[in-house]
Structures are given as C-alpha cells and as structure tokens.
Amino acid sequence: MELDKIIHERRTCRDFKKKDLSTGTIAEALDISRFAPSSGNVQNWYFVIVRDNEKKEALADECHGQVWMVDAPALIVICNKTEECTKKFKEKGEKFSIQNCAIISSYITLKATDMGLGTAMVGAFDEEKVRMVLDIPYNVTPEGIIAIGHPNSLDEDQDREDLKYHTYFESWGKKVFGKDSWPISKPIGKATKKASQATNRAKLKASGLLRKTKEKLKK
Image (cartoon, rainbow, N blue to C red):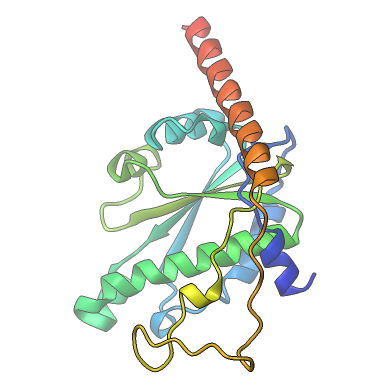
C-alpha cells in the first residue's frame, strides 16, 4: 500500500470486532516502527502490551471511563524512559524524549493501517494510576495508549483545513501563494461525515452504557 493511501485511510477506531490479535501481529507492527527516528538514536520508548480483560478495564477506568477500550483485543502502552535522553541532552532531554514517543506512536498507527487493523491513540489518563495498574517503575512515564485490533467500524474522516492557512515562507505571517504554488487540496464536504460521526458516537455511547449495566449486575 502506498504511503499516501495509508495516511488517507488511517482513521480512529473505537469499535472493534470480537477477534483475537496474535502476539506475532502486534510484534509485526512494533518491529518495523523501531525504525522511527529518535533524538541521538536513544530509542527511549518501551511498550507494555495489555490483553488481560481486567487490566484493560482498569486502564479504561483511569482513562476517564473510556469503556470502549475494553473491546480492543490489545492495548499498547507507550512508555518513556526519560533519563535515557536527559543523560545525553541535559535540560532539553525531557522534551526530546516525549517527541520520540510521539513519533513512534504515529509509526505504529500507520503500520497497523497497512495491516488492515484499526487503532485509537489515547492520551487522556491518570498517569500515576496507569503506572500503578501496570507496575511501571517511577523513572518511566506512560505517555500514551494505543488501542489496536480488527475494526468493526472506523470514525469518519475529520475535516482538514487548507494548507494555505497554516503555511508561511521565510518568516511568520508571510504567505506566498501564486500560480506556481504546490497543489492545495480542496475542502471536503461536511454534511455526510457529521451524520456518520453522530451515528458512530451514539453506537459507542450505547455500548458503554450496556457494559456499565452488566458490571452493576455482576456486583
């Protein structure tokens, strides 16, 4: 699959099929992602793969109740061993270490798309409680969680603003767009997408309420 096509086809997935994901499949997505760039090639990223349902439920709770995460066959927690960057780059190391983890997270989601898988990147969570759930040491920081699995449905594409509104030349605020400028994509229609997104959000909300009801009945 061509890179442009992969980028266009990547969508957030919060609705997964009830289908297992093998360790080998997850490893394939991670293995090629290791070639992502990192500051000074320090490769300060580490991964905790979570497939146990109880731990997934615990993580979903610490992600402010995003219960849809439990349906993903696996959660990949991206961890940052900051000291590996600060040793080399001093005060700038912390910033670089976060950037490195962000870059490899993008690589993972793109490779997953190429493999026909769906992903969702989750950044809203209680850092300390996630650390406790997974026994992550104090000197390692959970930076993000990637839910991964076989997609049942994907979020619709979100509108992207025209490049001309975000690009300057030589200095901030200086715009140069003429006939010989690079091609600028046309805005994409919103009406159909908004309707599809609303349907998907309603479906996910219903799924979450159903799960909560079942949990109450168990208790």
